[in-house]
Image 1 (spheres, protein in one colour):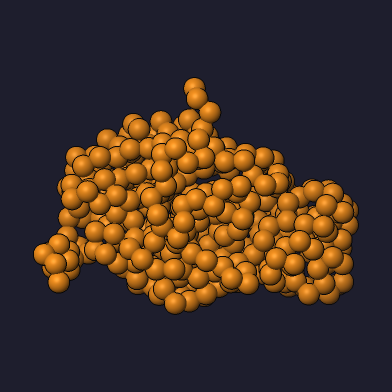
Image 2: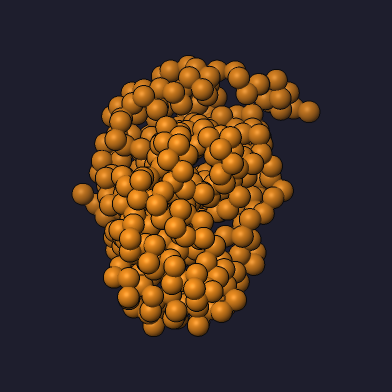
Length: 381
Ligand SMILES: [Mg+2]
């Protein structure tokens, strides 16, 4: 065994990290087709990579994408948070992972996805320094696999049917259908998808697009028609917890909170109100891995299950989300298809999904190659 390997094996997870530098770079990736929800339409994603360098030269990366409609953050504000308060919170500091990620959590309020990028970069560097796979350090496993879904954007019924056919031909058994428009049109959309993909399991996502009475009416009609709907995500506006509880009470379709749950405190409020059967955890909302697992803890105690989802984010973010997904027993489903929308497949590694079933590939940290600064170049200026 080499001296380096010997000294590395002597490092323990609770040992402090010394952060030499925090850097960030901006990227821009065109999507293969427009991504459309009740809240937004996206054809090209601007994203920012956060990079942490430890004193021993170990480098970790995390990423965040602009999601103005959900987190209020664009690429410029993410870059400003990473280059300002977030960098100041940890650069030149020595501390345990817990101390450093707490410093990140306390800096840049309102910049949850920028915080998530740096939090993930710290976790990646931590696990690489220990020469272990992140999921295992989080208490999970590398060997598992979960069916990944494919999202069908909110478009006209014919386009949605065509995209559903393509997804099924590509090996996906689970489709996530974006609805949340006019409810008569939403009915036509879902019928078209069911005709095109009669054997697929369906997840619906209204992205806050219905009122509680509308949601109850449309979901009742789906149940009456016997459509294979496994869950409905965020049927009503995020703040309408009472309305979501009424929807849950009135329908047999499991209700999942997404835009209503950002933190463990939100999760406890939703549990107390009886407003959801499932919670959608996204690092861009929680601001990091610790809060994501804290939501899963709330769910486990209350008997709810969780999905790990993501914004339209690049592969580094999605790989981090996949490590979280395999780290907690309350997390039973994933919604991690964004890389399939990106025209570039960088960086390599992290995970694979033969036949639509996602599994981690292992390797140190997130198990990804380092994304070069000149990948998916952002326009100058
Ligand atoms: Mg959602």
